[in-house]
Amino acid sequence: AEQVGHVIKALWRDDVPKVSPLKLKGTLGSLGKHAGFGLMGNTSVIGRVPRILKSGVLWKSKRHY
Image (tube, rainbow, N blue to C red; front, side, top):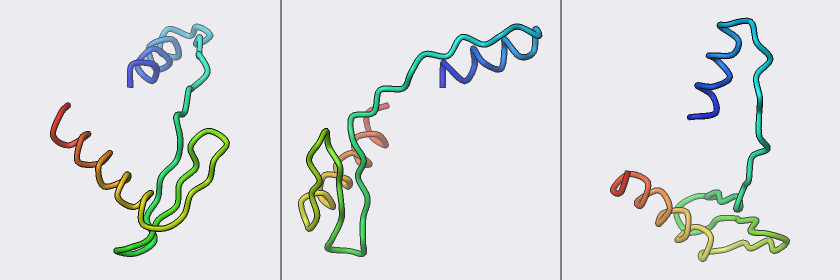
């Protein structure tokens, strides 16, 4: 969000925005109630574990920010 604010501010002033590369730690998704998929580093995972991890990430983002 901070980077988006800097880009909007630069465009508002007709400057060239300075954008730093994003650092993704991984991708998690759900496929129904009991299955999911994940890509963490060079490892891809399917099944119940990524589904549980995704639920934990969502819970943490809702409760601790």
